[in-house]
Image 1: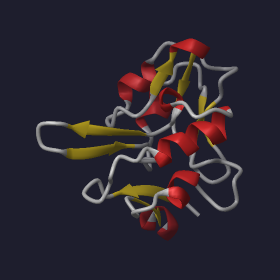
Image 2: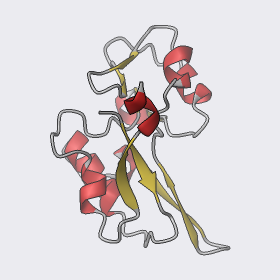
Image 3: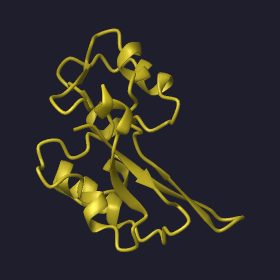
Length: 144
């Protein structure tokens, strides 16, 4: 079943629970810089933007990777194989959503993998207290 995280920045309250649980699950520490999603505040408008992988049907990050370090897992989610990645940044440049990023401290690229391996689904969706993140089935992929 193909899924995507849908965002509703209009209800987001920038509590950062989603980013903290993301980094805790993946890295074992609460660190906003290591979360696979970002909550950004526009101070002038007091609006929020939630940046998270859109899990494209034809991922441009995957196509752009010269070392084939981005592959589709069993669920059809593009994931980065860190041991194959050459750190060229082509994936990040190709992403139209700007959600792949370089973790300089650990010399690697990161992106959302929908908490791969977690049967209950992404923790960011589960923990959001206001419903700004929801998990939706990708209807296009299911019909194929």
